[in-house]
Image (tube, rainbow, N blue to C red; front, side, top):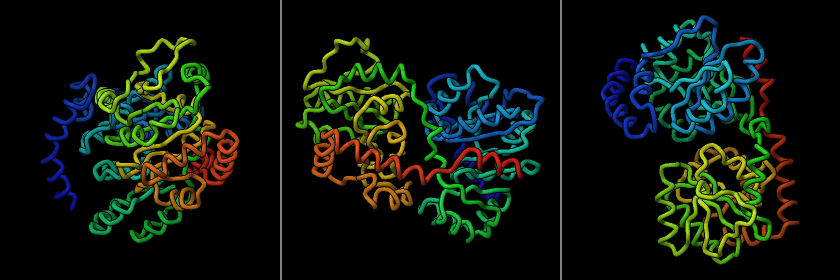
Length: 409
């Protein structure tokens, strides 16, 4: 099965490289060169290698990286996306934590990193189960952190059960989000598993830059309800604009992918409004937004500070897109959160938090209008936020638990 996997992967590798030539926003050739296992720096200290795909995942891994470094451990963090790499490069620019792009799933590339960094432990976030990486880490402890298996992944894994069972048998510890994940892992004869809870629910992950928060608060003012549409995908901005255009609010759109900013600004214009990019403003205290002005947030990696400055967050990726995004993030910075109802990647949390009405969802424009109208009332908004914060305190995994489990390996 490994032979067939590698045959297929090598066949699509040229496509992945060409994609990266278009998608990567800087140092394209250097990044591809490193993703092929070349130009990997040397390190003479035993290392813990941590990997998260995207911006959100590396934000969750960063506090753990800092805690492990404070214990005297050498840390390497890798990420796959532009935004994820930028985040860890900015976060750890003045530290001894190393940063690399995550390599293509080629055994020799993984082995080069493991050898050059003297990797002793590898921590893979959520559902990162790269066959060649896992197979290459023969003398290295492997940990799956915040493990989750979506419905779609579970169906694919069951169809390839012998292969997946073999992969999972090489992982030394699964720290699972939920009982459902544990039950699914048992079907692949996994026994080395502990229930952690969802580490995304840990308040340590959400640190606000107070200066930036104040800048955004001054920009938005306090005369209207300030609503942020966060992590939106194609079609979701238009949905929200059409729904909320008559409610006399300040609306800020924060697209998930920065490369869509120009398209979103143009779409706002086509809908009869004026799209103003945050980066074009000087944050003067006397700025007044007109009735037809809609702000477009183009500050990569800074959404948490915008959420902190808002009154209400609409977490997107769940309106037209179906996977959903982290609808808990605004709550940790004291902002009420609502989200669309399409939450394929958050099914258990949807059952626990949304289906119980702690975090309210909407399916159509009318439902969104009703929610935003209701939360224009400050007292109602604050009471709901209090309920949301209280519930989240019961759902969190902790970094101290993770470090304890890692020490026991």
